[in-house]
View 1 (cartoon, rainbow, N blue to C red):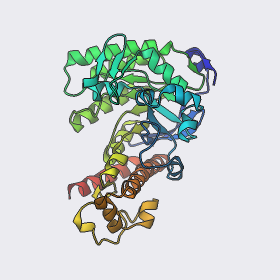
View 2: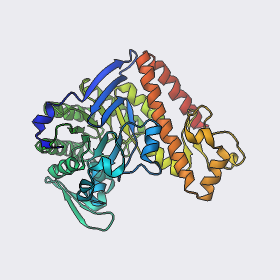
View 3: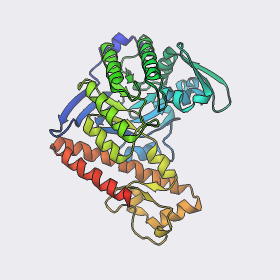
View 4: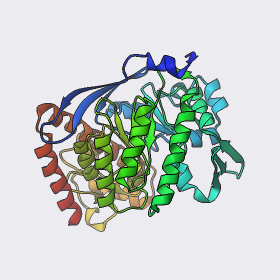
Length: 384
């Protein structure tokens, strides 16, 4: 792929189109058109931070219906290094995933690795969590390395603050994020590589709306909403997410970063969000927590030691078609590596099937009523 200017990228075919909307809320079905395939929205991106979804092969991801995955440019820059990945033909070939890839920039690590980084107007200087080596990243560097990875959707560097955060700090971080966004646009990228803007502003809806307006003026093809689910109450997350979604143009894809539980995804889709990522399916799977329509199941509990039923009789995944709760519990308490693999596979299938069902209900015009009932069922099960 020959690098072209950002102006050339703007002449590429449209990235996103909306097919159907639900009459009862803001949920919509759409299509993301990338160089490595189309993505039906709303959609969930399995998290492949360092070029792998933990415990699940690319072939299995395809079998369960994954259409796009998320990797992390910061982590890949540390190990194995962009030069190695570029020399292997780019990230798609390196990790054996033929479909679209979105890369996060490292902005979340500004939050999660606060003790190992220093933020300035120039960018962020990290001390590697692996060996302590210095890694300095400017907004320009972050986009350039994602271009070299060969990914489809790129994220600019942003300043993500933990909650609670004062209004003055939220204003400062949002203003810096906007300045970095402008600098990011100047970096050459491939014609079919799409750079999103990232909305910051803490838990202050007016700051969020202002940030959206300034990003829209810069004409980004899509908008990611960051800086939520970082310690604030879930009710606050929902309120701010709703206000922000309403401010983003309906013609652009809306990506809500780093969320969430199945019941929350149903609510966020109703607000008009199109893309999501979260580590919960694989992280919870590694710890013996499996998602179902009746709430999560802690497979380590003694009550499942002789349970011959599948985790979810209505689930079509390999785990549920093949193994009992008793066997999965045995694997979990024995520390066998197959346990986390089977649990993660089930959880990812559940999330992707949730998205499939949401798309079908939106297309049928029945999403709002259906989603309300689904949320109530999950939350009732979670409370027992």
